[in-house]
Length: 434
Ligand code: XUL
Ligand code: CO
Image (cartoon, rainbow, N blue to C red; front, side, top):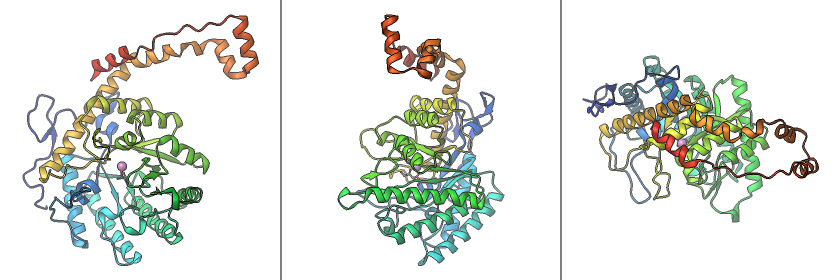
């Protein structure tokens, strides 16, 4: 045992009346919701980067956190892993997620970096044998090091493309060894700072070819997890190619990958793209590419990707409603891509940030399930489209032409009668369930 979380108890469900800080009030992993345990619905994951690697910096100031594992040696990387697994245990977290750079120090050569990764993956593998926490997904950090400043797969320099491909290969290998259920690609620097120096067509084609190689490799080694792209419109790039779900879908279609790759949708990224989280989820589900979520919240005033823990039950409930309507998670889950505020220095803050977020998600999922089971919203939605069940409406879609439809409109003197969309009534309905 490390000393880091000393004195912090294992978090247990105590019910909504509990006033104990270190307890769940709403997240009871064993509670049955729509016939499934809450833990299996939500599939919570802790993000290694925000919880253990991030040092508290912001654009105006550096490190605020002091952690005993900060530093670049393998021993410290192991101490970090020890502490991480202690936190997973305290929270009862079923999953975690990582980037290569979160778990191992960078070597002076690529070969040394690979050796470091291998050694820490061995170490994590041993820890996982004694733990019930599994790997939701792994990914490669292709954005922090200066070699990636102009992109990874979309870099003008083919040597960087090669370095990125070799890195992703090592990270898929690591993810597979640790039994990961998904592999994520987030292209933070796959975009541009200025169009003035950018060959947009070439960069997009290189990114498509790169993704085809990822999919080929996954079949080659028999990795059974889901490959996920995580859309984000900008930040750190001025413009990112994986802008939002619709853009990613167009990109996948273009490269013949729409049945191979799904999306990992992040609340804060949806907001940055000018969408709601539920919009991105509903669209992905309707396109058949919904995979997983990164749960957090952005500050609506600052306009940055602030990656805060979620605290808004209604907003979160609307998201889980779309997820449940789509049939729930399969390989995906709820990854807390969320970090402490830079003044939250204490080990307790790290635990309580997650406890609160897990409770918010549990409340939200239960409200969403109750509304879905009640059926009122789906009934109202179906009633709004009921006209499309009429034979002439079906025939119009099937073999209609502009001429045949025009003849029918004249012959039957069709005069549409506007009907209320009933938005306020449906909004009031949500209030009954949250
Ligand atoms: C960045 C972000 C990443 C990805 C993984 O905004 O969300 O942490 O989730 O690379
Ligand atoms: Co994310």
